[in-house]
Length: 248
Image (cartoon, rainbow, N blue to C red; front, top):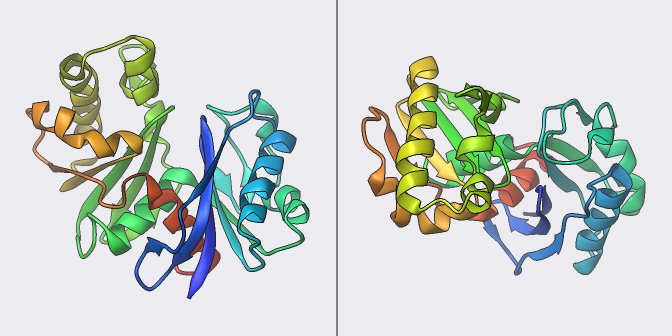
């Protein structure tokens, strides 16, 4: 069974059909830049462009970088604040020809995919997936069950939102070395999250997971196992499609 997934990010919007039996994309994903400012109308137009690229006519799952209840957006840290209290499903559905739409938090979607097809498959206990990118997304699982909308990237770290210090964007904006970013930023963030939740496993996702060998071996002093996401930056697309098919 194939279902379409779209992953809305702070810098890019990407999507593709997904084979839900294997957790893989059936075609190369199509990506467009997130409009700046990332207003509801602008982002909806980009989602429509991605869906139209494939001529898709079935259900569509869509991730959003913020708290989502039902299909209503409650927070918008890395997109335009005008998203708050917008019903994303009601907005985007008509823009893609009235196709059925399911909306969920972006990191929750990535976590669902990793727990089903990737690094968290078969794992019990407390598992936390963290997506490092424009911000930091999080997905918390207890014995395989998702606790939605945790948004742990907004925990306070040295007087700031953690994502302002430990995200990939922070590394790039401050021109930090891999070692400095890993040991002074990411390691301290993981230690803080570990103190609060005592997970057995951290899964590190986002685009930077492709370069996990550059920074994960540098992190020390964390009791939990730390592994890169196996689905890498496709996890959000896969999880979105799973949600649209009722498999989240």
